[in-house]
Length: 296
Image (cartoon, rainbow, N blue to C red; front, top):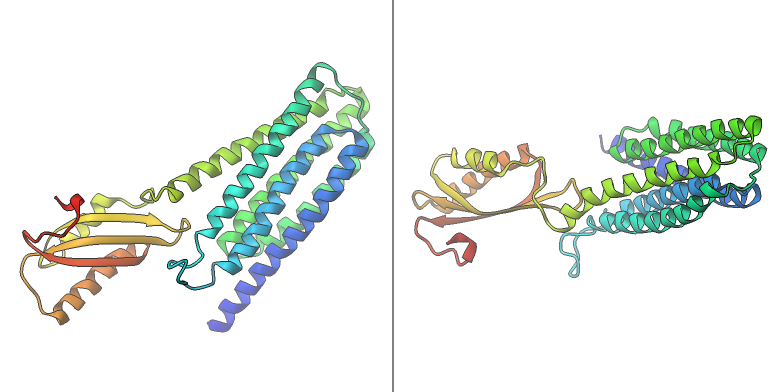
């Protein structure tokens, strides 16, 4: 089991690493190709791919970093650093998309000549490179690989749109298609950025994970024998998967240490069922002053 887990982890890193280098390499080609073909659609897709490259690179790096245990400076370890990567990625994509929009909107009113054949060749290359990366990451079984695979599939679809657009431009001469495509890609990128920010912000602000129902949790705990009530309950997440909880549990009667240990195991079993990884449980007697204003 240990060998298989190590093998899967190594394969996951290998697939994400390959996808990162392929994406980064092709982003450079796109930037050069966008300038040579005078295509703002190619440039906007380059921004999209650069965002994906940055996301892949940061995921690859923070995946290694998150394995480090707790330190004096970071008592919970480095799991939350993955959120830093998401924020950096969002900022880069917002800046890039605003630049693309500032370039594309004026071209709607005065379209510029683009090199349709060059766009077509880059689109074919983009579909091949990103398609290969999709096939590699789709074979993986981890959540990271599946998410990366979906991002790369979006890139393939983006290039398919550029491919169709370049063919239409070549036969019709409708150069306005180029800025229209770039606007669609930029809006798609911004839509995903907003979606990611909505996921990251509640975690950064230590909001209760949406999938966890406090009322249900309190009901389950208070059903355990000798528990009067539960209060001062706090639940938050370090990285969307590592959930943390602190709680004060009021007992009906005093119990010896060995019984408290058994009771704590019962509570932890309930918490494990709903995905709480780390829990701090404090026992109290009825009418005991717990020392926190929120208990009053």
